Image (cartoon, rainbow, N blue to C red; front, side, top):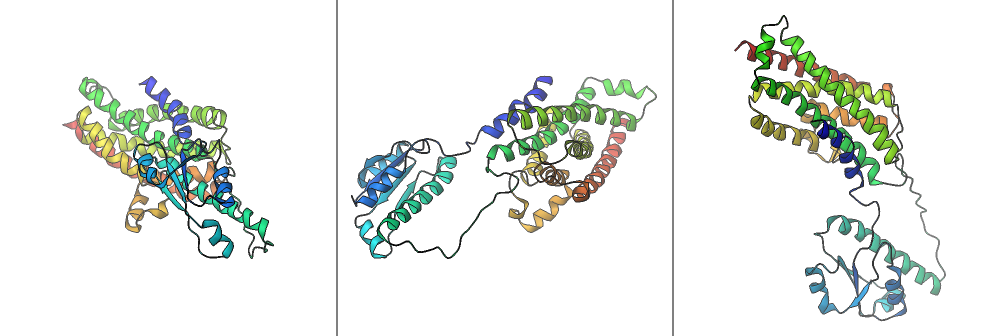
Length: 349
């Protein structure tokens, strides 16, 4: 169990943050050049390492075979007469064939190829025409993540998911193992009630996860991954403490519903997957259908993700995230009350 906790809050966070490359690297590109013009030659030379491997010049008949065999992720087709159409101001099209089974490269690389082609064509036209001033000068500034590094978002999202997962599993598994070993019956002859037993489970498991969260946040996220934390770490830990109160109570509740470890494992999967996938950590809540989005307001993970992103990314203070704190306290109290009632009834059986 200690090895699981250590892995979840160190290696798992680092791997999740760095698994997706931040930029396109050595993508396999083949080019079908049917124009053989100075513009097509300029386009061919524009796709160079390290974003792309040196492009291979192939015929149109070889394009499908290259994609089918996985020897190329992209095949760019430059049709005959392309430069003539561009200079004449007529519609000129480039065809880009993509092997979409390579999802990460396909999504990122398509944008790279399109942008490079537009820049090279604009540069070519600027050399043969008097450039016209653009009507709009678009200046883009990315806030909170200026380099648009996926590791910044991935590290925090993985940490938030692991806090929820470990809290539920550790608390529920500890109760079930004690029932399987007969330890709960020993507690019944002691001067303690269901409330004292539950509180002991909650604070002990919560303290372990809270300490591991602090180590992961300072040692892995800010230290090893160099993620810039914009807000107060103590405020985030206070929100984490409220979240732990809610999800550890959920773990006790699930343990009272599933009397054996295999049943508990299946129940955890059915509960955790929706909580994590629909909380906003993986996809923005605005992309979720409205009825489901409103329903997820009853889940503690939704509010924890919101306060985590607001504090750690945007530097929000308590004056901004107090609704999330209040929601976590209310949801935690409700889950604790239901779990206590079920746990007390289970001990009396």
